[in-house]
Length: 143
Image (cartoon, rainbow, N blue to C red; front, side, top):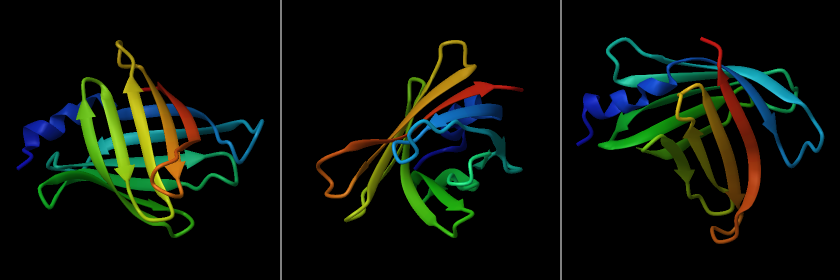
């Protein structure tokens, strides 16, 4: 079973981050926004809130924590979408993954050595074998 101490590995994400992103479906678009990570009281769930200035990118909230003895993320966005991702965190790399027939996704976030930048690269697959780049995002710590 995952312990509360294991969740503390997510502490490096806590704060407010400026976000700059690109998306293959929006070539040339400047996608800017802000993301915050904060603990729900009790430090058992990390809450991520994201807002983007681009109308094609939905605002979202995600809850990361241990459910059914697995580290997972429940994602909800302004379109009414809800998805559940498996989560792993090892040596400064946070990964989200969901394997669903017809629309699998994975996202890798790599934290800089100084902890003030996170580079994220999403990928998607329609057949579970062939992956293509999706959302690419860079977070810079604001506070």
